[in-house]
Length: 402
Image (cartoon, rainbow, N blue to C red; front, top):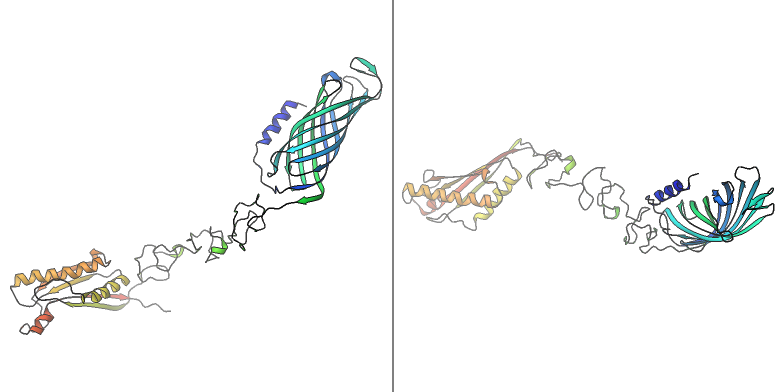
């Protein structure tokens, strides 16, 4: 077996990304059955072989563990037929580097007693002997452990085994399953009280009473990106773009959400059908504008505003309509002057409609002058009625059945 390749493989695994498990402090007794490969130093003249082992340990906390381990290697003399059993007993200390992860690295150091038991005469250190040969040794190494839970972990390590009597170093590869029993303590820290420990909680500070998932984050049952406790529309269909309240977006504000809106750019305030489109006009409706002006003036009066706003509301509700604003005068003065005055009066009202939000391409102003009086110009009362601006906006609309 190539020891260098095994070391390289362990180093490669060590940099892998592993899922997180609970890292709350845990202590208890551990049982570690295992198997390994023992590579004898060349000076021993013995073959390497696979060996079983069994360890009993105590984990003081997530970092420190001690273990008492026994193992037996069934070896034989190089190129010979004499069997030599190696029995080892050792006491180890293990330090785990990153107990909060499922894939953990650890260091090990310890020492113990070894006994070589030949079944015949062997040459040991150049001296023939058939007696048991006892040694003290130190062992040290690095390993990896994959924790399936707080109790069960698969682990493997490579370590040097140095004889304190012969100054010979062997190499041992070890694999085992660590099982914790008689667990004696566990401290769980959960600052926000959501049932998920702080070291696992990816959303610390969750408000009290909010339901969370196994990562400590608020539940989002419809997966719209808005947690259930804030979601005013908890059953939004999958894939629907929602607003901060978890409800389907309605960008044009017509009451029809984007995913159902076949006409997504209707004007604000417009009447629309269930598809979000402008209502088809089927009935005649109209609004009239009629305002009067002072003598020889095109300035607006305060009393004009209610009339202007009625027209604005109507045209907003019926965005396909257009309006022609007509200016009029009495017969005082020349016809040419009255024509210009009527145009200015029409332009005054038309500009107020545009300023109130009606698109300019929907508004036309014309001056009629003194040509179409509606009252007798021979009286002051009649002339006042003729100094006016009028408009009629007509549309056809369909009445919706509620």
